[in-house]
Length: 431
Image 1 (cartoon, helix red, strand yellow):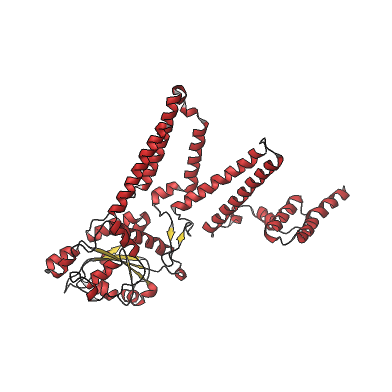
Image 2 (cartoon, rainbow, N blue to C red):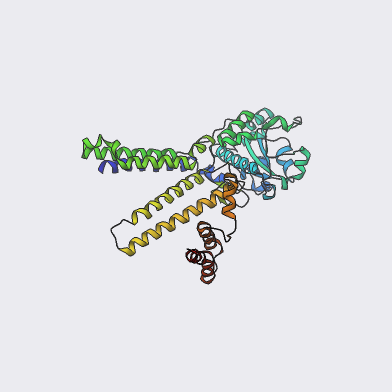
């Protein structure tokens, strides 16, 4: 155990060092990320602004990493010349009435890419070059990127002027000088398909259009977590080897090891981890309108990372509760305790199974279970009870009444009598 403690202590110190380094290196950029909002930029008085920074650049810099604009200020921040930054613009329609799932997916990637870029970039670097000659000004502007979002409800005129008939659309416009010719935005289009592969793919496409080097930094936490797990397993093996070397050589015979491996394999399959590796989805969903978080993706063919992990955990707990219910019947404890354990395990099993069924129905609202079974079976399940109906159908109907129509014990007793008691006594009297 001493070796295990040493390894865990070393890994813990490594985690603390990495965390401190991350905070120290991104202190300023983290403040910038917190400023990213849906509020439109407001004009700032010249007295409150440094004379070495152009007013428009200062306003955009104050709302990094991305800025919502509208019909009122599209001309000021995008059209007016000179513009001392690349303008990456997303036209979208995320309001609920439009039911644009692609818009939500693309906006998440857009925002994550903007945050990732500005975490390692200084937007105001070389701002004083705006007052230098045109060559120096354009050179400084070519290294600066700003991200903008236009919602259709706030930018109807812009959408109409551009003739946009479908969203989302993304453009990366280069900086402009005084007298620069008009440009066709279609020449600077970024395919929305790049959003499917996450922020890294989006930044790569923006980099190709703008010539600005961009790369989303990988967070060290997942790798450090894996390192901790590997270190713990190695320390555990080393500790056991020091106690009984001969037994340590037969580590592959340990039942607990293969139970753990089987559980991990099950969780990987159920959680859709392979999908997450291929598609790189976000950990959770964000509603950028009200700031709420979503664990479950609304689309049946999409998922978040936490969604898959939660489903796997619920499935494992559901199976574990069934095993506890079975094992509890053989425990050498008091009768009351044994019954309590069985009932608690059954309650956990029913609760988890019900939640899994509700999540399944939420994810597959388009799916109809009756299409997977023969018509005769479905008619029997959903049909009403008749005089000729047998005992299984009557028990099924009583179960439905108990689960969905129960009001009070009196009405339940009458239903039980009409469905079961009368039927059973009628059958016995006939015999």
